[in-house]
Image (cartoon, rainbow, N blue to C red; front, side, top):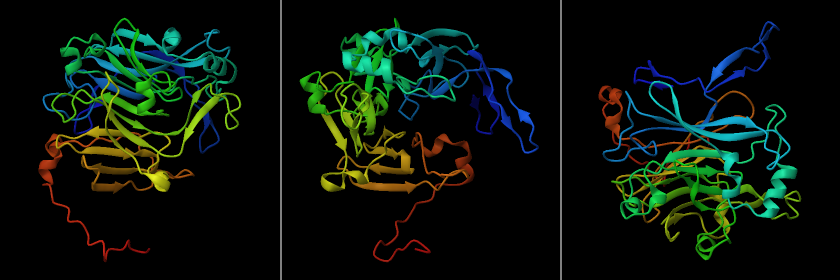
Length: 369
């Protein structure tokens, strides 16, 4: 759904598939739900034509009164070659302003292009986790899909980086890939980062979120920026901690990586070193954004911590989300966050920007602590 700045609905799409709503009991003890309704089945991500990544870049603004919308969704399928269990497959489609689906892609159609080893395929087939409440197995768990966008690699003749191609991030399988408009995987890193010397030097990426090409007009344009979560993910590589080969790779700290997507040369990274690595760790959600001043905005999402880093890795701004929700356990979690220019928000004119004066850290104390 698209809303204007006053909260009015401008555009909606909910006609991908009919679904049955969950039955629940209301306060009067009556059973409600169980209705058949139309749904987009969207999850995690969608992007509007005009801006490839959804955050601010000079001369790149999403179309607000026209244009196509890229939607990451789910579709339930059964593919015995992948698993005897019903799959909650990742389905990406593009819909025009009039609500017509004009392009579509299904992950299970391309399983042979993802670089899975025989051990990984066996683990998926035999042991992929089945969700009883959803009656399906979320085998790839793609958590972002964005347009490649205009970039120097395509300008120099590398068709893999066509602006209309799509970058996907599959969390459960540690795969980041680019698919073209024929649906084929034309660029990929993972799942096994020992596959090539360049990947080995970059280091195993685990459970990543929001990989994207830094848009034109921003420092580092053309490089790939990704939040490498760590945590647990991957198939194959059976070990004592993952005897069935599911969730077989694990790491207890996160990294933010900027690298050349052609050579995989590491350009810039952020993590905490030595024995304090765990102090920067979000095992799920999270993202990073390149800002016009060359700084990097980071969402350490599992703890709701937002901060801005200079290229020299100095933290110059930081914010902690308050606890959200009332159900236990309460959470600070932030899936994704972007910094936007102050003048993007019309209401800002009613509340002029005010400088924030940092407290004297030698005397500052949190009230009540």
